[in-house]
Image 1 (cartoon, one colour):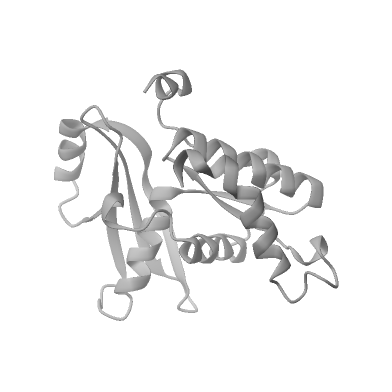
Image 2 (tube, rainbow, N blue to C red):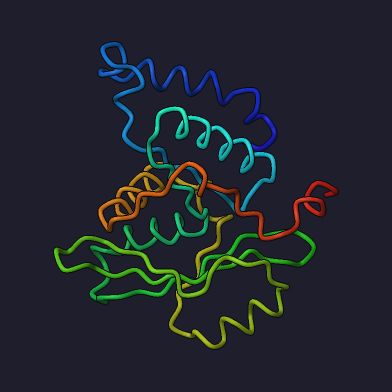
Length: 193
């Protein structure tokens, strides 16, 4: 949504929540967790999304899962390949254009847990790379399957929720204060673009 997020977020939130069957009986108490794509991505979108999630999490005293946009895309690709691939573990090199011949990139491994549930491990946290640096990093991981954020819908909501639920099943319960935007670049530089 980019810069229009500030204008449309609250009406969309109101519309979504009012359509939920349990909303009329127990409005806010029916929420058990909040999941938000924390970035990298649009500076304004990441900031507004995370601030809204933090505010709701704080007021409702529920966990807030601020998940990397790149991790969400790795989770989506892993989900799509589960029925196709026989590999117990898969490596995903997820990248997103950061302009100026730079890339936001991260490396994730997906595998199945003991009960067959999907898990995602961070092998290389999201960072800002020059295109040449990223290619050099990937040369050390030839088995990694490349995923370009530009070829996917922005942070698929269902994958975000499923990844947050997986983290919760693994025992993670982050507080609202732990949810921070992931810029990968100093915010002052991002604002100048």
